[in-house]
Image (cartoon, rainbow, N blue to C red; front, top):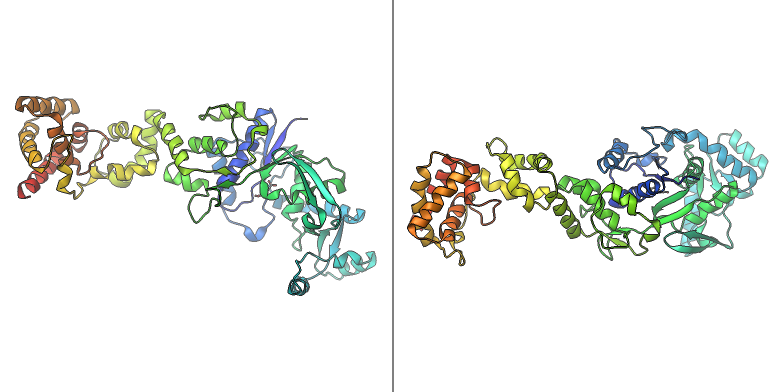
Length: 484
Ligand code: GLU
């Protein structure tokens, strides 16, 4: 039987990193086994409907290169792949369970249930649906249905005994039925199935062999197994994944801006780097390798190497991965990715982006660092004259003043404003004056950049700024040093 996995997100409008990792592992396993990876949209909770949310799912998966074999947009033999479009298919299955005694119609109104719940809770108990409607006779049920009283269908859960199953990651699991089970709703009043029901029906109808999902479903799995058994269907292999955490105590959270794929991509993390790192948060290849392309991940992936302890998503580690990926980028690709970030501060300034990109590529860890890194080119910062002091370069404001006085006429006299020409002319002047390189180059770079850290040195910056702006900045430096 070919392996069939599925990613079954609810369209919330955002792709949580934990969800993306679940998608990734499902994808990797299907590809590793030469099976199929299915995308199913679980949108039966219409109250939570968010417009445009399915597009976020498509765009994220596509942006990461996770292609699916069957799904809403590409179709497939088990369609439709959007649960709300499958709406009418679930009721007959629920009715089949009513027939066999595994489920029953419930006519309790929300108010009635609320009242009984309040009474149980007031007495210190925990509420579970009390099987009130289980005891209605067939005739009573027919009467109420004919009278048009709103109904739901509930599972007739066992109250005693226990349920055991095997999970690939967590091993043998056993839950007392009294705790793990309740008479959960299968079909809601609006006719929609609940997630709890639909996932079982769909996983069966879609031939899913491996259910890989978040560990929050470990404890509800006994209920799903009850349903599989009630239908006489084969239970899939379970692979529950640990939660992706920020640290040992905290989950990734929306509030901290570190939970969603878009949080990171918008900051300028590369999807490839994010995916590579995410793969390692919860799985290990069994050796020291850290860098994987997607095909390499497929090759290396083994569900028996999924970790049982929570995966810690360390942003610093991700940033390190990202910097490595950026360093290895094709320069043209880098330029393309960097240009919009340069534009934020340099648009219309006539700066040579191609050259700037060459200078920034090795220093870029995350693209959102670029505007700050290059802003000095747009406008000379209001810098402190103490920047001219540098012990190792043997310079201070006084030395700087004489150094700038030395280079000012040299630059002014240049006809060719290329990096090479700037370099040759200034170096010749330094040599002739018998000075140390640093004692001239440091002040020159401070005068024209106004910041201590710059991509490129004095000549590269002067070339980027152009003759006029370089001389203007030099004069500002001279004037300020003279008046100091
Ligand atoms: N729709 C569920 C979710 O988004 C899927 C759970 C599952 O994979 O069964 O969490």
